Picture 1: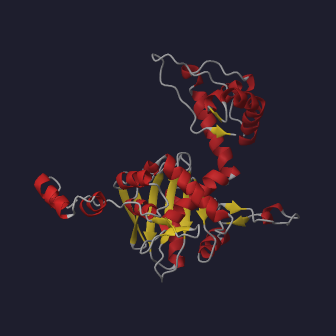
Picture 2: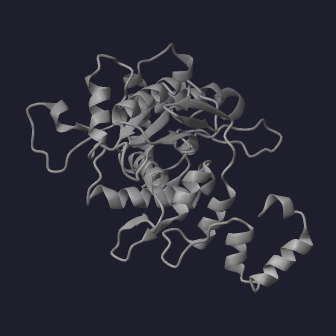
Picture 3: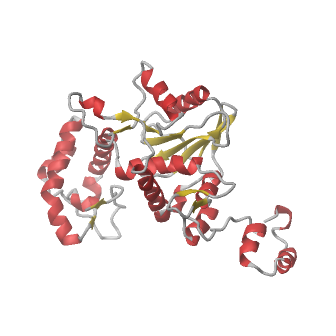
Length: 350
């Protein structure tokens, strides 16, 4: 709505009359909301939420003539996904970086701009330093290959780059050669990217903080041939960067990240066992909180054994979606006078 008249009901009513009280035109022209088209990818109720959720960033860092917008203060104890979509300095596409919290997938930061690819590599490098505990997901198609080469050919150890196993790869002599740095967008992965994007946004549209990203998501359309892409006059660079991260998180989470986060989550749980939970049903699992530091491998072995021994039973008793806390063997107290309990994030689906 025009700021000067947003609190003037008479003006608003007059404008509604001029628009013949057409709800679509009122939303778009007076309330400044973008509505779903007839072939919009997202349902109208999701579009409505995307119109409402974007919030102002809390800080900005100027990088290569454009700002890195930040919605959450960088936390070195949190894992982040740095999703990278690369474009050339010419043309209409934009180079984009979306930073998401690995656990809850909330948008943490965003950079969008036009620059040479070698300059964009420096932006990725800087974002990596700001959010050092991360997995960097770079689309390796076309210009993205230059970013992958930049991150992999430098003699440094602080780049945790996503690696993808190529389809029908028959190489057996070298385990490392079975994987390729970066994410390939192709006929097999693109539908899964779009599916993962839709799932995360539908379940919680408030994950999106950026108005620019929200507008791109709203502008996604089915082109009639089964391909989801930006509508006429729109762009999808930020939306696809978000989709890369959603795909990796949902369909191909890197074990190097999962193993460390599982250890961190377990330690958080164990620290609250005495005050919030009754004794664990697994003696070995419960003993973790009493022992000195264990290696990640030993910790994950204990977790794995406990899950393997209890998963089938839990699925039979509670269906395809189960409570992680119960799976780990904790009996959550229902007494409202008890101190608030800690529940590990997420659930496990069959």
